[in-house]
Amino acid sequence: MTVPFENINHTPSHNVKKGSTKRVLVAQADHPHHVMSAGQAILFVMLTLMIGALLNASSLYTRASTMDPSFARTTAMAVLRPFDLASRTIGLTSLRQHARTTMDLPRDDKVDTFTFTGTKSPFITPPSTTLPSLTPTSKLTVWIIGDSLSVTPAESMLASFSTSAFDIQGTQGQVATGLARPDVFNWFTHINEFVTQNRPKLVIATFGANDDQSLFGDGGAIGPFGSPAWRTEYLRRVSSTLDFLASQKVHTVWIEIPPVRDPVRNDRYRVINEITRTAVNTHPATATYVQTARSFTNPDGSYSDAITINGTPTLLRAPDGIHFTRAGGNVISELVLKKLRTLYSF
Image 1 (tube, one colour):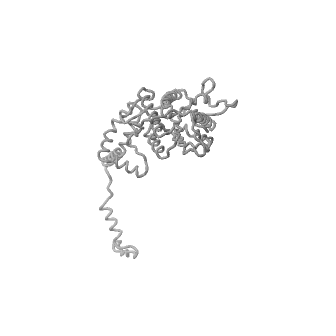
Image 2 (spheres, one colour):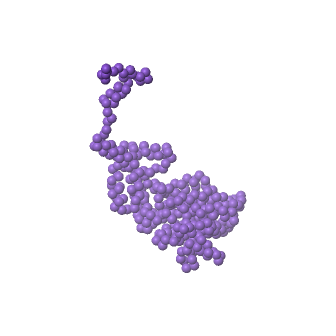
Image 3 (tube, one colour):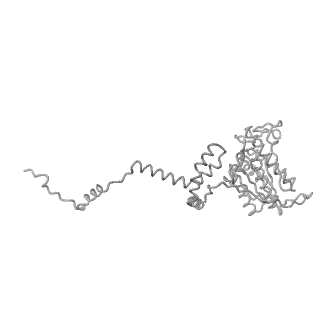
């Protein structure tokens, strides 16, 4: 005889709590997962983007302000300005920068335009006819600084400067920096801090290779490269640096940018060299200019990667036609030493 299915007595397993599986299934059926509608998803994405825009508004607005004058710059600043104001008003900018400071990251919500202001060179007495003598007990403390063009020459100076006459306190070559963009790396602040703390007597500087670009101040764009406003501002930056160093009783040796392979870039560097040479010439007692053009060109003045030195063709420039080989760095070092012998006895 067949037993009806519904009368079969199923004995539950001793390992499963009676009714537990049923309660879970019922609970899941009573409370299904909530799925956002398309409209809610779009609203969520828009709110996320809005919050992100507010958090980063000041940084984005600052970056837009440093663009070269153009329609894109004008449009970007117009769009980002309300977000920047809102972020600063409700305190998101301060909160974000506090977090960056905690993580030892630089500020990115303002264009750093600090330069030396109000610094006047001290009264300089007429130079003595006798050159100051450098000895093991009276060494000249030196700091070598600049952009990427300073790196290889600094290494050569470390190797060739007599340790009985010079005490090199350090070298610092910062790639892709200069006097044009203190928001990228503020050399003015850094020079101020290092000199006041370490008191070098001589600073050997190489700047300008990255400065052929627009300048910006507290009021925004000053002018495109080479314009009258640009020339005036760049001269002020070089001169104020020399003024500050002179006020700290530091003599400055400023190295000229040598000719480079690219003729367009070369013409731009001529403008920078002209301005720096003018600034140095107005500080005859506290600054010295090192000319490099003749040592890095052929007799007819044309550019060449390799120059004949003592009858031997010598490669002086790196493949990019701008930076130096070791031999090129040695040439710069010798030019600086030659100039120092007109200032000191060693």
